[in-house]
Length: 406
Image (cartoon, rainbow, N blue to C red; front, side, top):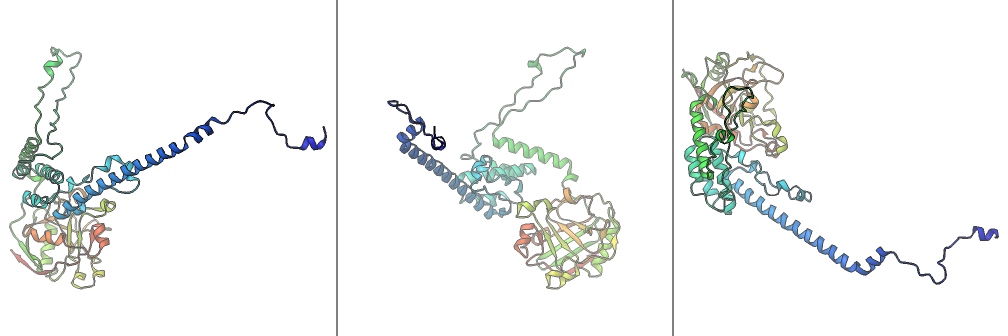
């Protein structure tokens, strides 16, 4: 064989008369490709349609709850269901636009709620009433709970669902016990009858009310000293404070001296704290607070507010009083153990979890608590502060006059 033949490309050729078999996959594709493409397009259309319906449903739910929360002033607690392209796969969140909604309900009565839900769809209104009733039951408010659950009919989705029975777990008998063993049927308690949602919540409210009545120290600030009484006349009203002179004598004495010297007169409440509207900032939330005591707040330049630090501190005292709502406490500089002599704050909510043992409570607001609520609930100076839940008020409340009655 010549060199040209050796180097030439060798092509295999089927023997004469033999038929080559085509690729079966290619045959199938050529025969059914139109049908396959059509089915693919149909499946994509179905998926897109379902995705659209799901998106519309979530938008609808978000609209219902967004409207409701804005009506009753709970918009900061509303956690909308995501509507992004990947949220479709997070099935656990699709029908839960009120995931953390129930925990944030506060300071609303049944009449206000009924009025706010009047224009909503029945399911949303009923769900809102149940959430509020649960909160009222936890607070031990029997009357409000009964009013909310009375007449709660369809379309509350769980209205027909019986409350699951609860069994008491009995201790196991020891093998060497001298006591005669009882049959399991004799040991098992009677199965309680299933109760309606109405009965469960009313019963829970009564139990909570009884517990609170027996343990008042866990829910209410103790009684302060009768005298002195300090009246703060502000631009939005008057509130009065009494001190825990026995529990925190050093702090009470210093605060009284500040008031008598006119330290707080003409000052503004220079800083407020509330729950952040941005959930990512919630880790720094320590309660709803209003701060007072910075002389820079007498000026209009807000950049100077909150920068004041007393040169001297009040020796830290263990008053043993928790951060109940509407108490008065001493601020503390970050690098100090003792309390700032001048700067104080008032609480609107219970702040025990984050502030007890770190700051000293030495007084309580005994009259005009609605003034503290107005101060803390005022608008922030910027959207960034609103998002963070801490900052300077847009319309700061000023102390006009301080009067001490001994």
